[in-house]
Image (tube, rainbow, N blue to C red):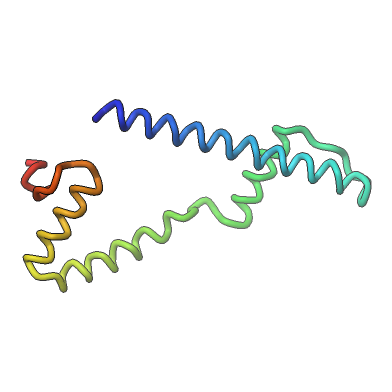
Length: 113
């Protein structure tokens, strides 16, 4: 189980690294192909392109990112949970247990304890 999470984490880190490389290279290539000829600006390096991406994210998107939506999701889920019957809650727990790999069909809450 621990090895599986380690592999998921490693896969995530590799995906993020690959995404940074691809997007950074695209920004660098587009900048260097267009802006020096159009406006007479200097060419940039890969590190500068990644820095521009980070800067634009801070200035345009803020530091909050997508985490701001988490509270809204939690409020909706809490409201939905309150409307469920005990049987529906048990079915939900069992389904989440199967999806999250905590068991093979049993109640996730019982297996977790």
